[in-house]
Image (cartoon, rainbow, N blue to C red; front, side):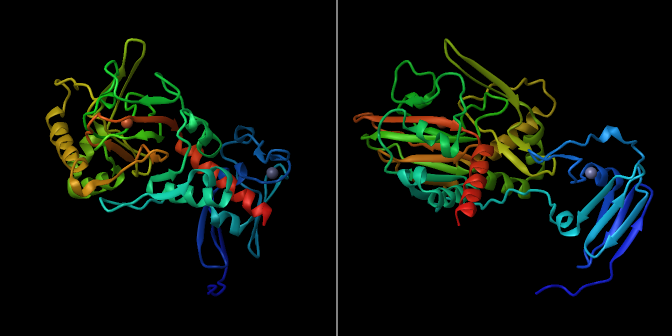
Amino acid sequence: MASPMQETRLAIGTDSIEVQWRDGSESELPFLWLRDNCDCDDCRVNQTCEKRFMLSSVPADIAPADVELVGDELVLVWPDGHMTRYKGSTIRALKPVVNEWTAWGSDFEPRRCDFGSFLRDDSAAAAAIADFLEFGAMVLIDAPVEPGTLEQLAPRLGPIREVLFARIHDVEVDATGYNVAHTSMALPPHNDFASYSWPPSVQALHMLANDSPGGETVIVDGFRIVAELRAEHSEAFASLCSTPVPFREFDDDNETYATAPMIQLDVDGNVSALRFSNQLMQAIPPSRAGAAEFYRAYHELCRRVNAPSAKASFRLGAGHVLVVASHRVLHAREAFEPVGRRHLQDAYFEFDNVRNHLVVVRRKGVRND
Ligand SMILES: [Fe+2]
Ligand SMILES: [Zn+2]
C-alpha cells in the first residue's frame, strides 16, 4: 500500500540540504555530493555513462545559489549557472550494497545443476548462481570426465584466477606432491592458498574418477562459525580479526607466502573472509603481543570448524564439480583407501566475477523478454 503523501520540506544548512520527501522519508545531501553526482550531459561521458565532472574543478565550499523542490524533483542552480536536477526516487534508491547469505550446518545439501544446462541455459545458470551467492556452494553434475573440463566454466564463472603451481591443479596420490592433498590422508577443513594476500575467492573441484572407498567430501560454512564465535566469544573473535598469521605454500619451484588475520572484516564490520588452513599455517612469532590470547581463540575456532555439527558431507562422484565461495566455505576430504583411481582437478575463479556474470545474464534475460 502506498504511504499517504506528506508535506515536503527543504532546509538549507551550511554545507548540506535536508529534504523531507513526499513519502515522509528524509535525506541529508552534502553540497559537494550534490555537485559531484550531477547526471547532466555535461557532467557525464554520454557514450559510456561514466562520470566526467571532476570535483576539484569547483571550490570545496561550493554552495548552490538556488534550490527548489518541485514535486519529487530537486532542482539546484550552482553559482556558475550550472543546473542539476535529481529525481527523489533516484536518491532514495541509493543504499549500501549488502551481500545476503544464509547460514547452514551439517544437514546442508548444495543445489545441483546439470553441467551442460549451466553452460548453455541462461535461466538455469542464473538460478544456480543466485543460490551459490546465497549459500556459498553448488554441485554441477554430469560434467565430462576429461582433464581440463574446468576451462569450460570460464564464461560463467571466470576468467580462471591463476596462482603459482598450475592453472588447473591435479589432485591425485603422488609421492612427490607438495601438499597433504596428494596423499590418501584426511584433509581437514581449509580454504586454498591462504598463502596469498588475496586468496582465490571461488574454487571449483572437478572429480574425474573416484573409485577408491572413503574420501567423502566435506564442506563447512565458515561465515556461520565465525558469526557464532562473534556472538559467544567476542574477545576471541577480536583476537582472530587482529592477529596477523603467516601462511606458506611452496615446492622446489614455487613460493607463496602471506601474513594476514584469519578473519577479515569490511569497513562496516561485516565478516568478508575467513582464512583457515592448518596445513599452510606457519608459526607466529611467540614474542608477538597477544600470542597467548590468539592461541586460545584459535583453539576455539578450530574446535568449531572441526565439529561434526558444522560438516556437511557427501560423495563427489565422477563428473561432479563442487563449486565453493572459498572466502566463506571451507572444504575437506575424509581419508580414503588408495586401491582405485581417484583423480580430482581444481581451478580458481573470483566471487566478484561470478556475481557480475549473474547481473549480465539477468540483463540479457530482460532484453530477450
Ligand atoms: Fe584444498
Ligand atoms: Zn551537470
